[in-house]
Image (cartoon, rainbow, N blue to C red):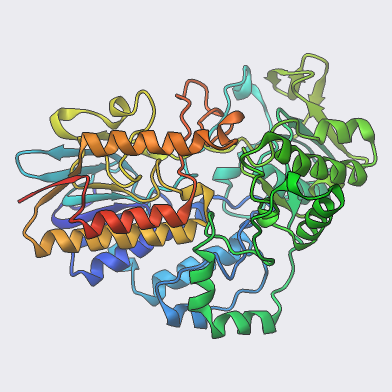
Length: 534
């Protein structure tokens, strides 16, 4: 039984990038705050996702905190794209450096949070029987933290070990000599498959939807490049935050349109971006996520790369996606497509031969049964809302968040929800979040929340809640912006389409700079769109 705490100003749920910085800012305001974390250590996504090959898809010099110049200067990244162990070490260093551990309760899963309108306080309950009350509840639960495991007949009958990439065991898993099946071909699969293939005797990849992936060209960071960035880190970060995704690019972003240049010019730009590597590939032309014909020029370029890389053309054809490029999160890989040239790696297209069941000895499709010693579920997450919806959160009049969001998530700025006073969501649905460098979005949200709480205290306000009018207008605007793009055209986790029964709504907001400007404007106008009460 965890000792009850009745005197908190704020409960922060989650100890990843968002929770750690939120605690640091709360302390700076003189607030009593407690972080409640389900895991056995800090790190959030980077604590749980320990699968082989786990790596960030944003370059290390950008994927780190900006709030402390000293921290930025003292930490030395070793690779262009940091792997999970290095990012976790970084977050553990941050927790140590800023002495955050005393206010972090690990192995403490939050199961409920209820608002008492008469007292103006929240009561937060944990799985272990703990109970905390606070004026503010701040959800730092992450956009990709609630794992999604498909329901497959016979799954419990499999006699070998099963793993989910989002809940990987702590400790080395050795697949040497084993027959391994991987279900899924999203980001975690794209990263893990080349590593598992180096160990396994046989590897069978079960693919439902082919994935666009661009090469990372990962390697050690050039010391001179790191020194140059550190010498002008502030300007470097400020420039990056002006990109629509808040991710900087190695070559200038262009306003040119793909169909306004010659085929030779297009190909030269795609070739250059492919050689650069990484997510900025989609920055080649300004219309790639707006014009289907322009988009297809980029998609066909990637399909050409797959056909050149994969020797067996039947396999290459199955690996070639047929949807819009970029409407799903694009992957960044190290040797993914080339892995299918190995004689012991096999691709099963589930659109041709769906899985019918899992058996004690493997996986059965409509065409064959595959004998396996281990199964890896690389099936992703109930993104954006999953972690929030798995907690029994009740606002005014006992209304649950599940009921409030039954027709899809509704927020004001991804920060506040009507009917849930003094309740904040860091990178919640309706904010840029997963369409950006997450660290930039996290720090922008945390700073906004901290400044808001400080404003409330300075002006004698006890409660803040989004208004119905502002929330409705914002939800409509998020949808309007999305509908101008190609994002809603495919079944992605951006819409919740990977989770059976989940309402399909495009959840993130496209465009970090205008979003940040809107948040600044709201704060400058005495938190316009929120009702403040004393």
